[in-house]
Length: 180
Image (cartoon, rainbow, N blue to C red):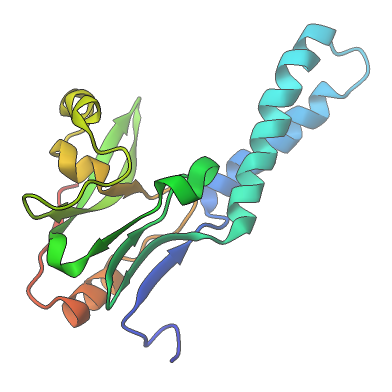
């Protein structure tokens, strides 16, 4: 089925504006650190930070792993790039009560998130525990359970309309709440 007409919503890690900018800036700083006359301390500290960080972000984008997927089985919450397999979670439709689009303050900016709300008693997800919930009560503007079942929209592109289309197809009546 054609990607644009399929009811499945899938987003993969790739080069979005933020990732491209960070990789380009990392490459520029790495090149500057390699110039003759650059202090050794700056090179020792800066090369792993900018060179390694830029390479890691490029690797993540090039991996094309699934960041977020909505299909007939439920929702796949793609894991963090550093520990993808251990942090990826699948939430079946019977555990989902809704979707929430929200933002986390990050200094003067904010990071968009998309997440699911789950029924009481749903099985735990990676990172879902009493200590995480205690911290998230103070850190996230959504309930801790929703924060745990959310993914930051960084390193991939989010399409609200396609998400709503997939949810309406696979779970009619399931709300998609925009809490921005």
